[in-house]
Length: 387
Image (tube, rainbow, N blue to C red):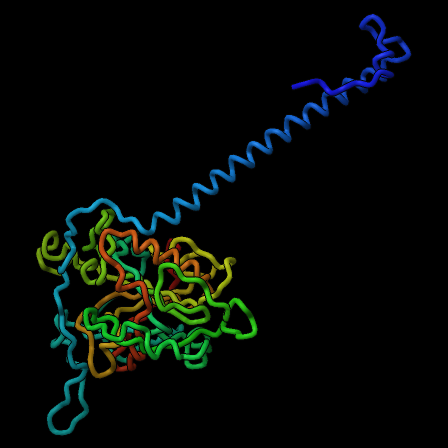
């Protein structure tokens, strides 16, 4: 690097390469100034170079993230396809002879237990149905289960007073009239998009609740709406393999049921995580990893109701019940705000799975709240150990 220019007046102070005694201080100042200027130039050069490099790196990252969601892993044999045992819905209550009040007959259900979901999960609630089932109270990963699917429902299927309930508010329910997926017979869980309960966060005076997001991967999603996300878990899934995530979720839950478990449920464990969100167009609420399970961060995933129930969806109500029963539910009692981009990132992650998960890119309908007579009396109110 060239030396900084020095004025003729300063040069005249130097005699024979040595400074005059009276001028030694001036020369020291000059040398120091030259060194400082050189250092500044070097630092500026490095900063410019780094800025240029960072822009190039940033450009590469943006391109790669944009490309990833359209790509899946290597093609291979999906061992989970069509492993769903196909248990049909059943009448919830059999009318007794002689005009007596009907009753739930658990022995009629394939799994010998009849409790249903989604239920009231307000702290202190207990259903009226006496059951012997015991919910998994530890985090699922500690119990050997892995997530095998993720999907969500329009509004909440569960009820938590003061969080998501009849007093909840949101945009008009015009979105629920026709979601473009009304014919959903291929999946018992869904049915038409019947709206469930709403959260209490919505405020139409604030843009984060009303300004629509430019969705890239999710379908028929709207800012301001309430959605209940479900993460089915199982110890019969293809955990840790490219076949772990499946749609419909039953294929993921029962993937190794007939092979490694010999068609018996003696050692089987099935659970669902549920968390309710109000969608906002605000990146301050961005969470990048929704595919692996419930968000556990501060109040998120902290206050959990745990009970046994069933699979849900609008093909079931308080007259027609699911036979997929005895399933542990771990439900976050609080409603949380989350960015629309978090969901879009989730749909991008789902798109990159080996199995086609496109039938879960949009919200499914919500089952009506389960009657007390069909809700289990085993609700646990302790916080999750390890969360």
